[in-house]
Length: 250
Image (cartoon, rainbow, N blue to C red; front, side):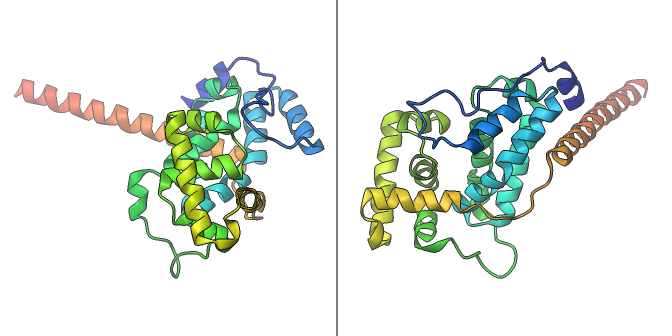
Protein backbone atom coordinates (compact mmCIF):
# COMPACT_ATOMS: atom_id res chain seq x y z
CA UNK A 1 0.00 0.00 0.00
CA UNK A 2 2.74 2.47 0.90
CA UNK A 3 4.59 1.61 -2.30
CA UNK A 4 1.42 2.12 -4.33
CA UNK A 5 0.85 5.46 -2.63
CA UNK A 6 4.39 6.51 -3.49
CA UNK A 7 3.96 5.41 -7.08
CA UNK A 8 0.68 7.28 -7.43
CA UNK A 9 2.01 10.47 -5.89
CA UNK A 10 1.91 13.37 -8.33
CA UNK A 11 5.13 14.83 -9.70
CA UNK A 12 6.21 17.07 -6.87
CA UNK A 13 8.67 19.90 -6.96
CA UNK A 14 8.65 20.27 -3.18
CA UNK A 15 6.61 22.53 -0.93
CA UNK A 16 7.64 26.08 -0.24
CA UNK A 17 10.33 25.90 2.39
CA UNK A 18 10.13 27.59 4.76
CA UNK A 19 6.32 28.00 4.50
CA UNK A 20 5.34 31.50 3.31
CA UNK A 21 3.81 32.64 6.58
CA UNK A 22 5.79 35.66 7.85
CA UNK A 23 2.93 36.61 10.17
CA UNK A 24 2.73 33.17 11.72
CA UNK A 25 6.31 32.05 12.19
CA UNK A 26 9.40 33.92 13.26
CA UNK A 27 12.26 32.23 11.39
CA UNK A 28 15.76 33.61 11.01
CA UNK A 29 16.79 34.03 7.43
CA UNK A 30 20.02 32.31 6.41
CA UNK A 31 21.93 30.50 3.73
CA UNK A 32 21.12 27.12 5.27
CA UNK A 33 17.39 27.71 4.86
CA UNK A 34 17.88 28.69 1.23
CA UNK A 35 19.96 25.61 0.47
CA UNK A 36 17.37 23.38 2.12
CA UNK A 37 14.54 24.89 0.09
CA UNK A 38 16.51 24.53 -3.12
CA UNK A 39 17.22 20.88 -2.36
CA UNK A 40 13.54 20.12 -1.80
CA UNK A 41 12.41 21.96 -4.89
CA UNK A 42 14.90 19.99 -6.97
CA UNK A 43 13.64 16.61 -5.70
CA UNK A 44 12.28 14.65 -8.66
CA UNK A 45 10.66 11.66 -6.93
CA UNK A 46 8.57 11.21 -3.78
CA UNK A 47 11.36 9.07 -2.34
CA UNK A 48 13.94 11.83 -2.85
CA UNK A 49 11.66 14.46 -1.33
CA UNK A 50 10.88 12.29 1.70
CA UNK A 51 14.55 11.53 2.27
CA UNK A 52 15.44 15.24 2.13
CA UNK A 53 12.69 16.09 4.60
CA UNK A 54 13.81 13.33 6.95
CA UNK A 55 17.50 14.17 6.73
CA UNK A 56 16.99 17.83 7.56
CA UNK A 57 14.27 17.48 10.20
CA UNK A 58 14.59 14.18 12.07
CA UNK A 59 17.55 15.08 14.36
CA UNK A 60 15.94 18.36 15.44
CA UNK A 61 12.59 16.66 16.06
CA UNK A 62 14.21 13.96 18.19
CA UNK A 63 15.80 16.69 20.27
CA UNK A 64 12.53 18.60 20.63
CA UNK A 65 10.60 15.51 21.74
CA UNK A 66 13.35 14.73 24.23
CA UNK A 67 12.90 18.22 25.69
CA UNK A 68 9.15 17.56 25.91
CA UNK A 69 9.42 14.17 27.61
CA UNK A 70 12.89 13.72 29.10
CA UNK A 71 12.94 10.23 27.55
CA UNK A 72 15.39 9.59 24.74
CA UNK A 73 13.92 6.25 23.68
CA UNK A 74 10.45 7.81 23.43
CA UNK A 75 11.89 10.70 21.42
CA UNK A 76 13.37 8.37 18.80
CA UNK A 77 10.22 6.24 18.74
CA UNK A 78 7.91 9.24 18.33
CA UNK A 79 9.87 10.72 15.45
CA UNK A 80 10.11 7.37 13.69
CA UNK A 81 6.34 6.94 14.15
CA UNK A 82 5.75 10.41 12.69
CA UNK A 83 7.82 9.71 9.59
CA UNK A 84 6.14 6.33 9.14
CA UNK A 85 2.82 8.19 9.10
CA UNK A 86 4.24 10.75 6.69
CA UNK A 87 5.32 8.10 4.20
CA UNK A 88 2.00 6.26 4.45
CA UNK A 89 0.23 9.54 3.62
CA UNK A 90 2.89 11.07 1.41
CA UNK A 91 0.54 12.40 -1.33
CA UNK A 92 -1.10 14.48 1.42
CA UNK A 93 2.16 15.53 3.08
CA UNK A 94 3.79 16.37 -0.25
CA UNK A 95 1.32 19.16 -0.96
CA UNK A 96 1.08 20.42 2.60
CA UNK A 97 2.37 24.01 2.85
CA UNK A 98 4.34 23.05 5.97
CA UNK A 99 5.49 19.40 5.85
CA UNK A 100 7.79 19.95 8.85
CA UNK A 101 4.83 21.10 10.92
CA UNK A 102 2.84 18.08 9.77
CA UNK A 103 5.52 15.65 10.92
CA UNK A 104 6.16 17.62 14.12
CA UNK A 105 2.49 17.45 15.07
CA UNK A 106 2.48 13.67 14.62
CA UNK A 107 5.64 13.27 16.71
CA UNK A 108 4.41 15.52 19.53
CA UNK A 109 1.00 13.82 19.57
CA UNK A 110 2.59 10.39 19.92
CA UNK A 111 5.06 11.50 22.60
CA UNK A 112 2.45 13.28 24.73
CA UNK A 113 -0.33 10.71 24.35
CA UNK A 114 -1.98 9.96 27.74
CA UNK A 115 -0.70 6.38 27.89
CA UNK A 116 2.91 7.54 27.58
CA UNK A 117 2.81 8.94 31.12
CA UNK A 118 3.07 5.37 32.44
CA UNK A 119 6.25 4.80 30.50
CA UNK A 120 9.44 4.22 32.45
CA UNK A 121 12.85 5.42 31.23
CA UNK A 122 15.36 2.78 30.22
CA UNK A 123 18.59 2.56 32.15
CA UNK A 124 19.20 4.02 35.58
CA UNK A 125 16.55 6.62 36.35
CA UNK A 126 15.36 9.59 34.40
CA UNK A 127 17.87 11.21 32.04
CA UNK A 128 19.24 14.54 33.20
CA UNK A 129 17.34 17.41 31.54
CA UNK A 130 19.19 20.17 29.73
CA UNK A 131 19.89 22.64 32.54
CA UNK A 132 17.46 24.65 34.69
CA UNK A 133 15.25 25.66 31.77
CA UNK A 134 14.92 22.04 30.64
CA UNK A 135 14.13 20.92 34.19
CA UNK A 136 11.44 23.60 34.54
CA UNK A 137 9.96 22.64 31.16
CA UNK A 138 9.45 19.04 32.28
CA UNK A 139 7.59 20.22 35.38
CA UNK A 140 4.82 21.78 33.28
CA UNK A 141 1.60 19.97 32.31
CA UNK A 142 1.93 18.40 28.84
CA UNK A 143 -0.26 20.93 26.98
CA UNK A 144 1.55 23.87 28.60
CA UNK A 145 4.92 22.27 27.84
CA UNK A 146 4.08 21.83 24.19
CA UNK A 147 2.66 25.33 23.84
CA UNK A 148 5.62 27.16 25.36
CA UNK A 149 8.11 25.08 23.38
CA UNK A 150 6.35 25.90 20.11
CA UNK A 151 5.92 29.61 20.88
CA UNK A 152 9.07 30.53 22.76
CA UNK A 153 11.38 27.73 21.64
CA UNK A 154 10.55 27.44 17.94
CA UNK A 155 9.16 30.93 17.48
CA UNK A 156 5.63 30.10 16.30
CA UNK A 157 2.95 32.67 17.01
CA UNK A 158 -0.03 31.97 19.22
CA UNK A 159 -2.30 31.56 16.20
CA UNK A 160 0.00 29.04 14.53
CA UNK A 161 0.50 27.15 17.79
CA UNK A 162 -3.26 27.03 18.39
CA UNK A 163 -3.78 25.53 14.93
CA UNK A 164 -1.06 22.92 15.43
CA UNK A 165 -2.29 21.89 18.89
CA UNK A 166 -5.96 21.94 17.86
CA UNK A 167 -6.80 24.46 20.56
CA UNK A 168 -8.50 27.82 20.55
CA UNK A 169 -6.41 30.97 20.51
CA UNK A 170 -7.72 31.91 23.96
CA UNK A 171 -6.77 28.52 25.42
CA UNK A 172 -3.33 28.74 23.83
CA UNK A 173 -2.72 32.22 25.27
CA UNK A 174 -3.79 30.97 28.69
CA UNK A 175 -1.49 27.94 28.54
CA UNK A 176 1.39 30.09 27.36
CA UNK A 177 0.91 32.60 30.15
CA UNK A 178 0.74 29.91 32.83
CA UNK A 179 3.77 28.11 31.39
CA UNK A 180 5.86 31.29 31.37
CA UNK A 181 4.83 32.08 34.94
CA UNK A 182 5.73 28.59 36.17
CA UNK A 183 9.09 28.58 34.42
CA UNK A 184 9.88 32.01 35.85
CA UNK A 185 8.92 30.81 39.33
CA UNK A 186 11.13 27.71 39.11
CA UNK A 187 14.11 29.49 37.55
CA UNK A 188 14.60 32.98 39.05
CA UNK A 189 16.89 34.05 36.23
CA UNK A 190 14.13 33.40 33.70
CA UNK A 191 11.52 35.68 35.18
CA UNK A 192 12.05 38.11 32.30
CA UNK A 193 10.18 37.11 29.13
CA UNK A 194 13.07 37.92 26.80
CA UNK A 195 15.48 35.87 28.91
CA UNK A 196 13.03 32.99 28.96
CA UNK A 197 12.59 33.04 25.20
CA UNK A 198 16.34 33.17 24.71
CA UNK A 199 16.88 30.21 27.05
CA UNK A 200 14.23 28.07 25.37
CA UNK A 201 15.54 29.05 21.96
CA UNK A 202 19.02 27.86 22.96
CA UNK A 203 17.55 24.59 24.20
CA UNK A 204 15.85 23.97 20.87
CA UNK A 205 18.91 24.91 18.82
CA UNK A 206 21.24 22.72 20.88
CA UNK A 207 20.53 19.63 18.78
CA UNK A 208 22.47 16.54 19.80
CA UNK A 209 24.60 14.58 17.37
CA UNK A 210 22.73 11.32 18.00
CA UNK A 211 22.45 9.13 14.92
CA UNK A 212 18.96 8.65 13.53
CA UNK A 213 17.85 6.08 10.94
CA UNK A 214 18.06 7.16 7.33
CA UNK A 215 14.98 8.17 5.41
CA UNK A 216 15.40 5.12 3.20
CA UNK A 217 15.33 2.75 6.16
CA UNK A 218 12.24 4.50 7.54
CA UNK A 219 10.48 4.12 4.18
CA UNK A 220 11.35 0.44 3.96
CA UNK A 221 10.27 -0.17 7.53
CA UNK A 222 6.95 1.53 6.84
CA UNK A 223 6.39 -0.58 3.73
CA UNK A 224 7.26 -3.80 5.60
CA UNK A 225 4.83 -2.86 8.36
CA UNK A 226 2.10 -2.20 5.81
CA UNK A 227 2.67 -5.53 4.08
CA UNK A 228 2.61 -7.37 7.40
CA UNK A 229 -0.61 -5.64 8.44
CA UNK A 230 -2.22 -6.42 5.09
CA UNK A 231 -1.28 -10.10 5.32
CA UNK A 232 -2.53 -10.28 8.90
CA UNK A 233 -5.88 -8.75 7.97
CA UNK A 234 -6.36 -11.02 4.96
CA UNK A 235 -5.29 -14.06 6.97
CA UNK A 236 -7.71 -13.26 9.77
CA UNK A 237 -10.57 -12.69 7.35
CA UNK A 238 -9.78 -15.95 5.50
CA UNK A 239 -9.68 -17.89 8.77
CA UNK A 240 -12.96 -16.37 9.87
CA UNK A 241 -14.62 -17.27 6.55
CA UNK A 242 -13.24 -20.81 6.84
CA UNK A 243 -14.73 -21.23 10.31
CA UNK A 244 -18.11 -20.01 9.06
CA UNK A 245 -18.02 -22.39 6.07
CA UNK A 246 -17.15 -25.36 8.32
CA UNK A 247 -19.89 -24.39 10.76
CA UNK A 248 -22.48 -24.18 7.97
CA UNK A 249 -21.29 -27.48 6.46
CA UNK A 250 -21.63 -29.19 9.81
